[in-house]
Image 1: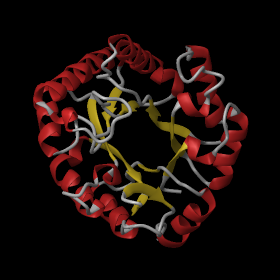
Image 2 (image 1 turned 120 degrees about the vertical axis):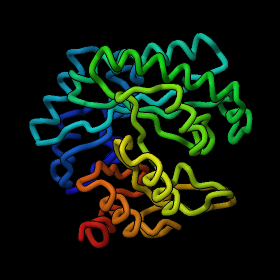
Image 3 (image 1 turned 30 degrees about the vertical axis):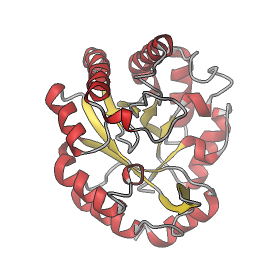
Length: 275
């Protein structure tokens, strides 16, 4: 299959052999892997990873022809609690140093919020918040450069890095081939920019050379809130989006992400997106 998947959307946890076998059965050859979720108990929510465990994950997946395209380490790099902020920064740096054991070229995160639990907040968009975030990213990129690993930043509508202007600011500040983007068009949908397909096209027009991969999902507004829904039941023209991505990046990394119900979503993929 040309698509990857977020491993924890398969709903097999703390059992790498079973997860690997199921992914093979479903036809996947690559994935996004977040130890915090897929190995929640084994890794104590991602904070007890080590080289041996990471290598075990890699071997178990590779036995079924599966690789980790993106190593997920999502957290809050501008947490107002300085101890929590540093705890995440240390974790992300550790994941960078373990990426080779996982067989993963890239470690990815969103950029967090100045007010955990408050969403949305315009305080994430202040110059101070954006500059703090870029400084934090720069620290991780320096670690990645030494380790020979890529850092992936996923812009999000309620995060400091959230649009063309803030992405440009980040790239102007951090001039490094080790800094990449992971684009989730639905994650950038807002009242101002409601068309996920247009967002994908804009991101490709501006950043195609540094986009490492894409997340594929669908959404609609339910009770005034944007929620991910089964493929084909929401607002996104998914066939158009996939064609746009493939035209820009043949054999692109495209990870199915946020699947409320696995079976109908995969049925839609096979019937509509594998042509």
